[in-house]
Length: 221
Ligand SMILES: C[S@@+](CC[C@H](N)C(=O)[O-])C[C@H]1O[C@@H](n2cnc3c(N)ncnc32)[C@H](O)[C@@H]1O
Ligand SMILES: Nc1nc2[nH]cc(C(=O)O)c2c(=O)[nH]1
Ligand code: SF4
Ligand SMILES: [Mg+2]
Image 1 (cartoon, rainbow, N blue to C red):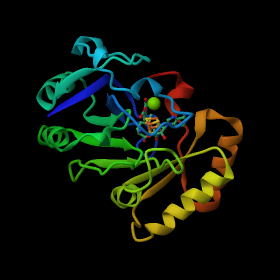
Image 2 (cartoon, rainbow, N blue to C red; image 1 turned 180 degrees about the vertical axis):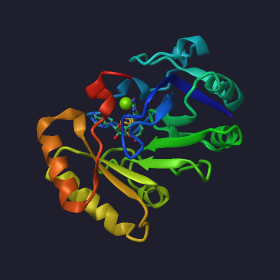
Image 3 (cartoon, rainbow, N blue to C red; image 1 turned 90 degrees about the vertical axis):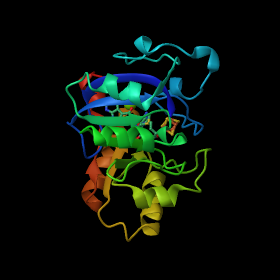
């Protein structure tokens, strides 16, 4: 199966409970959700005139909206060139695509996988994929599959800027109270001071984890 690939680069996972894990990021093109504060707006449109070759999407981390059309075998041979054995599939919204052919091949070849998703599409991935759901309450792109995504989640990484975001998260957690192993993280939106202070206080209050987008503080990809 072919995937529209915006970029592939090796770095350290900067978000969530796996912060610090050496990882290769595979960023897919396309997302209809439209978060106003999204830090990857260049991935939203899959514009057919922006189709490019693999060389232009490998080892880059920039704001280009070009993408290469690559199948799982081409991706595997490319990913095998890196040291990191943890592959983070993000976007854009990776769950617009069926991730089973790709993640199955990666697990067969000794990789671990993680996906970063908004929970607005049904999740099709390998059973051992570590699933990070970052809910987008009130955004276009909807809400309908979010509860099933949250039940599949290994980690819920909730973006926060206001008290309303905390109430939204609590309402979601009440719907999945039987998913008792899920890690809950708060991620301050855009490193804002007030958002960060709120997240610290709420993490302490509820025994949640803080996720500060470490890569932005370190100024790495
Ligand atoms: C760019 S998104 C791509 C994956 C998927 N569309 C999603 O939203 O989970 C990756 C992660 O970055 C988070 N994110 C995006 N922009 C952010 C920002 N300005 N501040 C904090 N987190 C942000 C998202 O909530 C998500 O957890
Ligand atoms: N270092 C690093 N960690 C990340 N964790 C999630 C990211 C993403 O954009 O999905 C990301 C990213 O872009 N860079
Ligand atoms: S769902 Fe993810 S990629 Fe899409 S707009 Fe929101 S943060 Fe950006
Ligand atoms: Mg990012």
